[in-house]
Amino acid sequence: MPLIAVILATAITPRPAHPQPPDPGDYSRAEYEVDVTRGVLVPMRDGVRLSVDIYAPRGSPGPHPGILTHTPYDNNGQRVTATWFAERGYVVVAADARGRYDSEGEWDPFGALHRLDGHDLVEWVAAQPWCTGKVGMIGGSYLGWTQWWTASTAPPSLAAIAPKVSPPDPFENLPYQHGVLLGGWMLDWAAGSSGRTAQLADTGYYNGWPLHRPDPPHTPYIEINEVRGLRSAPWFETWYRQNRSTDPYWHAIKYQTPESYSRITVPSLAFTGWFDGNHPGSPMNYVGMKEHGATPAARRPSLVIGPWTHGINTRTLGGIDYGPDAVIDIDGYVVRWFDHFLKGIDNGVTDDPPVHVFVMGENRWYAEDDWPLPGTEWTDYYLASESGANSIGGDGLLTTTPPAREGHDTYVYDPLNPTRTPFDSWPNTNGHIDGALDTRESASGDEVLVYRTPPLEQAVEVTGPIEAKLYASTSARDTDWFVRLVDIHPDGYSALLTEGVMRARNRDPDNEGRFNGTQLSTIEPDEVYEYTIRFWRGTGNLFQEGHRIGIEISSSWYSYYLPNLNTGADNAAMVTRDQAVVATQRIHHGGARASHIVLPVIRRER
Image (cartoon, rainbow, N blue to C red; front, side, top):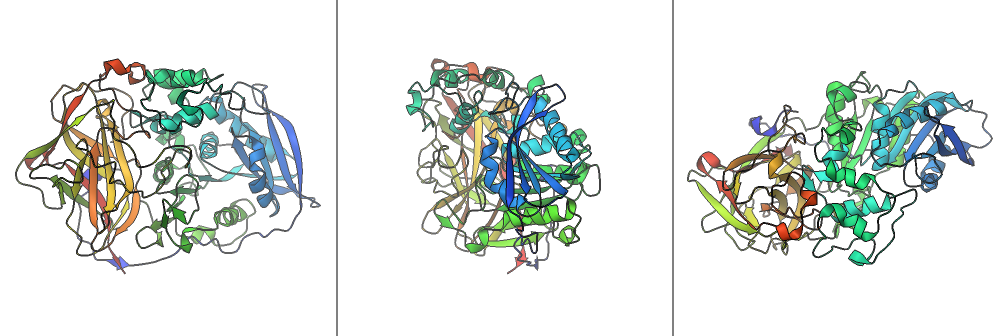
């Protein structure tokens, strides 16, 4: 996808609205009791045996299509979902990942062998007498990774995948997000992933496990989980020491490349939420498969985005009720998908719209022909101020008219006193976003810049990916930039929608305009640089009449992210707090340095 910033906004006639939730329609109903066989050991190509549980329709000679779920979180945890699908005429195989629970081998969350293990498991399932030879895959989060990793090896018997909340490439999401070190939830996920069964020896530091927002965080960051008592996790230090995407550890498990996508032959049905911390994986995979998939079916992916966090399919999030339509029949949607691609039933699934998005603010689903949405008006909203945009009490302005006069706003960032998130990043949401929470308290300090439109005279829909263009300088050798989009209600409530993040030294994009994790740029103190920041998550929101569109800028967002200590060290994870550098930050606006945000505005007849 080309850079949003170079796409020219054009006047487009409002198109007719097509409200349409992702309705699964008719699909296989429960017909069978289920027999379960546990602890079957399946040999991989290197001789290591993975443990699988098998859920099969009782009293049916078969054969039936197979469904594989490949998890590091104990395959017994898949029993409810596995039983549901088996009742509908599928044999479900739930596998423990290599080195976890009952499977043999050494565990590493991002070990390159997971890709090959998925291939071997698919082909083992297909070869069993109870299987028709066609296999699908299901699961969410890490289980989304295992689906994409497996599909990228093109196992001949894999027929379709249905990943939910699938993360992007690990280096793009964990432990770094666009070069910024993640905080509490990543550390706790590492702790929960240690050893065979979460071997964490609690030392009492950080109030035990979960993390609960330590203050201040231990430094150097590379030692945090060792101090907490993490055991049997030699890969944890590797995550921090190999801090470029081209380092061998990360390169071995990458799947979001044109070469990898071009090996994938199967159709994909992906689900994610606007507040999912792994959100970009699903739309990135949609675009990648459409452009590079190996077959016509692979190049026709499907994407569903709801008003959800990582635990998808909720009606209420962050205290906001998105209405009864927010909850959909996801398992039914998936089984209808498999009914066609695994059972060969002509049920019209290939005629469904490829994209469904839920627009918050009006709480309505729309069926779409593509992602980003056709007819998007990429609209520049410029930053401006008179006296200063510091805090919610400042006079920062967001306007579609470029300011003629050049100016800037200044704030001081102290890494030992970071800007706080309005939510704990763990344990309430498994490390993801609690929803459209009020950011007023977190934006009340002078270290946060706030820019707002005047109250809107008519509603504005913003649905799609978002990008910011900042002209900024820092007095330090490195720093972080955080840009947040908020919906400011007439009563002042500032609803957090999404954010973009970038470590200054990762400012230079790669040849495709994406985040560059391959090199570290030089940052000269007080030099103004141009930063193109692709927001970590897109959004789908109708800013109602009388609301304001708001932007917040800071250099920290703790505890979701660990504060940058601003030293410019090649590996920030090894820096200690006594080396922290307080930085003077400047965001420039107007004239030749017109910092702005690019919003995907959608015009519909409503």
